[in-house]
Length: 427
Image (tube, rainbow, N blue to C red; front, side):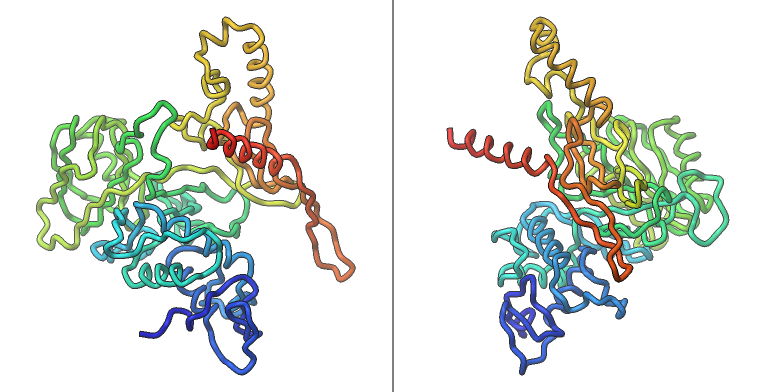
C-alpha cells in the first residue's frame, strides 16, 4: 500500500510548486502531496483548505496557514469519542452535509488520535486522515448559513422551508454577504453537553429526527411522554407535516424544519425524555430503504452576518444566540461563586457585581458566551468584549488593501487565566 502523502511529514511552508516537502527542498522530485492532503481535508469537511474543484485557487498545493489550521482542527476532533459519518441509508439526500449522523468512535473503525494538536501531518495524523476518508467519517461540527427562500425559485408560504445561502455551505471561511441569512451549527461531538449546574442537557433538547420518505408514506412516533400515533405525509412541504403533527400531538410539541423537496427534520420541542434509541416505527412503506429516520443534533442558531467600517463577519445577539443551559449569563453565582442571597447580604460584593453586570449589559447583554467577529476588533468575547486585536484598513501604493493589526487586551486575559489555571492545577 502506498505511503500516505508520499511519506512526507507535511507542515506549513511545504509547496508542491516549489518542490518543498517535509521541510526540505527536493528540486529533482515531483509530488502532489500537499494537494492530496488538501483534497482529503476538504472531503472530510474541513473547509479552510482550498477546494480543488476550483483550479484557479492560488493556494492549491501550498501548505499555508489555513491548511495548518485545518490540520489542527482535524487533530482536535480526531481525539473525541463522538464523531460524524455519512450514512449510506441517507444516500437519497442530495446535500452531503445533511447525510451526516453521529457515531461513537471506539477506535475499531478509525483510530483515536493520541498525538499533539500541532498542525503538522505526522504519521499518526496521516493514517487517521486516510482512515476517515476510507470509512466516510466527517468533521462532527458543521456551520452553515440558511435563507428562507430557495436560491432559485419562488418564495414559500412556510417559514420553515430553507435552502443554503449562496456560498453558505460549511462556513469555515466567511464568503456570504452580510445579513443574508441565519447561521446555524450542528454539533455531533457531545463535547459541550454539561450545563453549569451539573449533569447533562437532556437529549430531547437538542434532537432532530431526519425523515426521508416517498411522497406518500406513514411513520409512527412512539416516545416517552407522548401518545403513539401514525402520521401520513400527504403533501410536499414541511408545513403539511407540521399540521399533521399538531393535529395528532397538539401544538408546540414538534417543529418541522426542512428543504422544499426534503429531507424533513422534525424537532422534538416538548418531549420530556428521549433516550439514545427511542422507538421509531416506519409503517406502510413498501420499500423500507426509501424511508429513513435518524436522530441527529438540533441546528443551533449562531447569529447573523453584519458589516462595520468595511469589515464583515458573524454577530451573535444574546440571549437568542447563546446556550442558557451552559450557564452563560452573568448571574451572581456564575461571576462570584456565591448564591444570589449571599451576594445581596455582602454590600461590597453586591456593589461590585452590580457595576460589572451593568457594564456587561452594554457590551454583551450580560452573557459570557457572546462572541463577535464582524468589526475591526477581529474577535471579541467576554463581559466587556475583550478584543483580540485592532485591525485597520489601509490602501497601499499599488492600490491593494492591507490590514495591519495591533494586539489588544484579550491575549493578555487569556494568558492570565492560563497561568492561574496552571497554578491551580499545581496545588
